[in-house]
Each structure stands twice: as structure tokens, then as C-alpha cells.
Image (cartoon, rainbow, N blue to C red; front, side, top):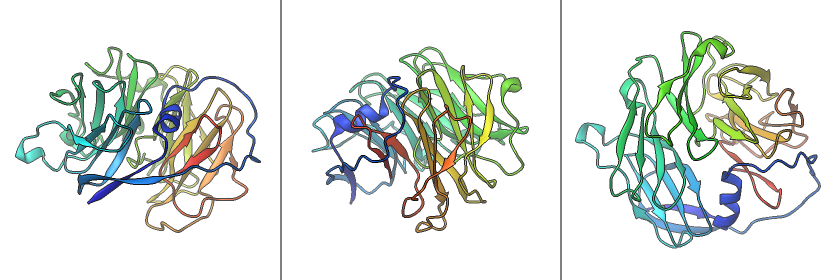
Length: 305
């Protein structure tokens, strides 16, 4: 049986919500800790997506078409995933974005038509398939929303550039974004569908984490259409690079990653920025191993998982 590791959902929800700009410098001297508790889910799926809405409500998503929801702070979890045809039963929902106990958007990964987006507005009782990838070379990794209406999902490069699809109606419909403003990808560069945080938004700006090249890079955009890229000071490889990027305001951000084939590796797997992602500095002390996600908490303790 798989378990979900739960801290206070209020704290996790604060980290997952839209950032409130403060532009205060990072305080690396804070030494606070969180208490964690394992809670049974009665599911054998592996989970990669997490969206905490409040101190009581959260959604998780994972392998074999699994989506779970809690409305009692993680004490119990209910299966609320879409009813899939037998040929689709192995879909992996690597990202979930939730707006309430009733509305959520999930993204499945894979080549070709395995990359899909579903939306529910009744707590998972019913799901609508709102996007199916028709480009054979595309592979969608993650999705994020800047508000209740506008969101972006990102694919590995198509024709030399990361591909984006955009919604302006809360996930009900999606369209391909013109790639003319996207900075070119390097040969072998791609994103990681490890935690749903390879594309994130905070304080009016978008960020995209990339690996497959050394060093890994972070792309940034003020509008989601025009993008530039910077060296993230994180070691990259065929299985490594930047897995997750999060900003707490317009200036201060953290990127984490590593090599998932070397889970205990702790060499240049984290970096921070104080200028909105234009430049990155390698951490003074690295996390003890590969990290696939990062989030800011209200107490301003930065945490990686």
C-alpha cells in the first residue's frame, strides 16, 4: 500500500498557491523544521502530482490513471480519477492543479496521444478530456496556472523549441502557443515530468526547468510568450538537470535537480537566484541526493523533496 507524506496542508497549500510579492532577500539562517506523518491511501499507485488547496483539501495523481482527493486534511483519501478505457488504463497523471474540492486539472505524460489534459468540476465524479496531443514528437511534462483562468502546459522541444499549450478559460480549452518567442533548446535538452513543477509561475512571471544538457537551464518569461534562458548552475546529463524551479516573489527563487539514476548524488543539485532568474548561484550546501521538487512555505523555510 502506498502512503502520502503529509505536513500541515495549510503550509503546503501556501507553498502551492500564487506567490505574494515581497522581494525580501533570502534568509538562509532560519532553522525551522516541519513535522511529517505518513497516511495510508489504500492505493498501490506511485504519486508524482500534488495540489494542496486548503488545510483540509488536497489532490494527488500518479500511475495507472490514479487520482486521489482528501477533504479531511489527509486522514482519508478517495479515488476520484477518470474512468478510462482499458487501452488507457496505464496513463500516468504526473501533474494535478486544483482550484477547490470540486475543480481540478490533470495532465498525463507520454509520447503522442498519451499526453492529455482532463478537467473536473464536480470533485472527480466526471472528467472531460479537453486536450489530446497530436504531435508524434511532443511529450508533455507539466502544467501550471497563474490564476483561475490562464494556464500553460509544456512539452519537450518540437522542431528545436519547447512547445507550450495555453488555456484562458480555466482549462476547458487549449491551444498551441506560437513558438517564435521561445528561446531555442540546446541539442538533447528536455524537461522532466517528475513532480509537476518543471513549469511554474509566481508574481507575474513564468519559469521553465530543463535538463539533458550540462549545465541545466531555467527559462523565464514575463508573459508566457517571449522566453529567455539562463545557466542554472546545476549539473546536467542525459538523466539530470533542473527538475523543479520555484520563486516566492519577483526576485527570489530556488531550483533543484540532480540525476535520477544517481539518487544519492549530491553534486551541484541546487541553486538560488536573487534577480528573478536572470542569474543563478550554486548552493553552498547541497541537498543529500537528487531532488525532484521544491516549494516555498509561509514560514519562508525552503523545502525540497
